[in-house]
Every structure is written in C-alpha cells, then in structure tokens.
Amino acid sequence: MRPAAPGDGPTHFIPPVAERSRRRTDPAERHTGVPRSGGPDATPPADPGATAVLRPVSRPPADPRLDATGLMGAVPPVPDTGGDDGGEPPAEPPRPRRGERVVQLRPEQTGEGYKSVYSELTRPTAGSRVRTIVRGAGELLITFGLVVLLFAGYEIWGKSVIVDAHQNDLNGQLAQEWAADPTVGPTTGPSVKPKPPAEGKPVAGLFIPKLDKHWVVVEGVTPDDIRYAPGHYPDSAMPGEVGNFSVAGHRIRSTFWRLDELKTDDAIVVETKTEWLVYRVYQQRIVKPSQVEVVAPVPGKPGTRATEKLLTLTTCNPKFDNYQRLIIHARFDHAQAKSAGRPAELEG
Image (cartoon, rainbow, N blue to C red; front, side):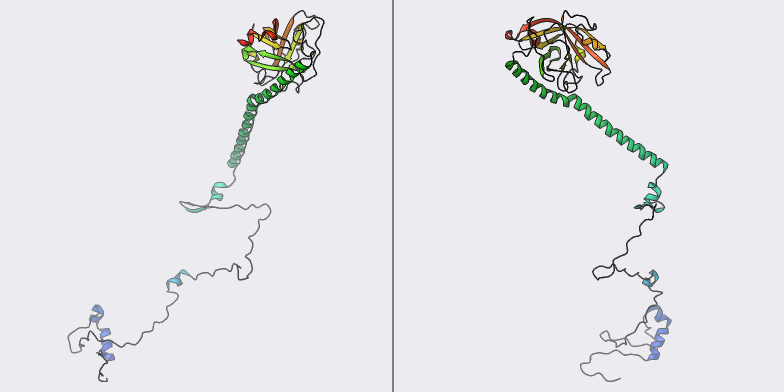
C-alpha cells in the first residue's frame, strides 16, 4: 500500500480477504451487523470521513418464472386495426343464418355473478306473448276511445260553429229574397198561393222561445238539404196555409237536440215575409221511422182533408241514434204583422 500523497484525503483500511471472509461467517456479526470490538482480530474503527473503494456488484438476470410479471402471463399483443398505416380493414362480424335472430345482450350483476338479461329475463315465453297481445289490444282500445271522444266532441260542439255560420248566410239570403221577389213568402189572401222555393233555398224563420233557439228553414229534407238547417217537407203545406207545415231536423246540438223539452202549450213562432205566425204545442209522441203519416195534412189520417193550420217538427230519437222519430205537433194560435213589431212570445 502506497503512502498517502498530499491532497489525497483520508483513506479506509481494507482488511485482507481472509479477514473479510471471517467477518461474513461470524454469527455475531451476522446477527447484529456490527463487528465485535474486542479480540486480537478486531479491526480498528474506521475514520468517519474516509471513503471505501468497492467494486461494482453485478446482479444476474432474474428468472422470468419467478418475476411478478412473468406469473401474470405475457401481455397479448394489440391487434392491428388497419387504420392510417394502410393495413387491411377489420373483418366483418358474422351474419346470422336463416332462422336466427341477433339479440343485443346486456350483462346484469346478480348475487351469482353476471348474467345475460336476455337469456334470463327477456326470452319470449307464453306469458310474455300473452302480455304483449293484451298490451297491444289495450293501446288499440285507448286509441279507439280517444277517436270516439273526439268525434263526439265534434258532433256536439264542432258542428254548432259550422251550422251557426251557415245560418248567418241563410238569414242574409232570406232577407234579400224577401226584398227582391214579392212572390217569395206566404200571404194570407185566399186567392193567392205562394210560389214554392227551389230545393235548398230558404223558406222561413223558425223560433222556439223556450229553448232560446231560432233557425232558417230551407226547402227539402235530403241529407244535403238539412245538413246545416231544418228542412221543409216539399209535399206539406207552407207557413200560414191550411194543412200541416212539416219540418225535419237533425238531433244535434245546433238543431233539434232539446226538442223533447217542449210541452203542451209551448209557443213555436214562424217568420214569413210579412207576418209572425204563432203556434202552440198540443202533442208530443215517438213513432217508428216508417210512420210517415205524421206529416200528412191531418196527422195520422192520410187522405183526410185538412181544416186547420198545423205545424209538425220531426227529428231522430233517442239522441245519438235514429231508430225512432220524435214528433211535435202544434196548432196555429194567432198571427201578428211584422210592422207591429215582434210578438210577445219572442220578447218573453
């Protein structure tokens, strides 16, 4: 060992190889990690500022079988997706064969682990098919009920708006015809017979004070004629004539809906070109649709010569059906000239 040169600094004494071997085999040192301080072979304490020159220890490569990552297995390589590197595109999933159906499965965690929702909960069974049929039938019935309600609402309220609009037009037409044609409208003279209007044209005004309703009556009783107004039976008498002035109307809110409320002695007023004709109810009855004798000149007695001025109103019965007819018979009470104003029956 060479003497220390100036500037080398302190050095550590390195014992011989045999001494190092002894120290490694000394049980006390192995237990405490500190060499014993006594004895002939004791090594002097090292200088705290000294440094040791040691050879690097190379570690042999670890056994991959004992390595943590080796126990987990090799990481599988990432498949090539054929992206921007120009590789082949991924293969298409297999298509189902005939008779097979692709079902999207959704895992669901249970106490026994994950299970397929389809295989355990949604596989078609007899009960599920019955429930599907019942649910579909229920939805269909609900839809049908809504359609019926909408139709009923239209029949009750929707048509009233339409009929009122047409009635306003008919009022204007009737006023113009009475002002332009002196033959339109009845007269009470015995030698002058009024000219019947064309089918679908306005004939007279009809008022029912008890129901607070009034309409313009048109000529004809076909479905087109009475769509928006009551219609006059063409073969029956005109207003103010001897005979039976017969009028038909639909049983809807805008027309004869409340006709069954009329009682004996209730007033019905007919407006002509020059007069107000007041009739009084004397009979209400329900007949079959085939009993057309109710509109004969003498109701119920076809072929009998008329001697009175009568008024007959007909409509369907019951409401929302037509297998019967509701009939109101009224008898002429008195007339009042329009120049004298409106009759008291309309003012009450």
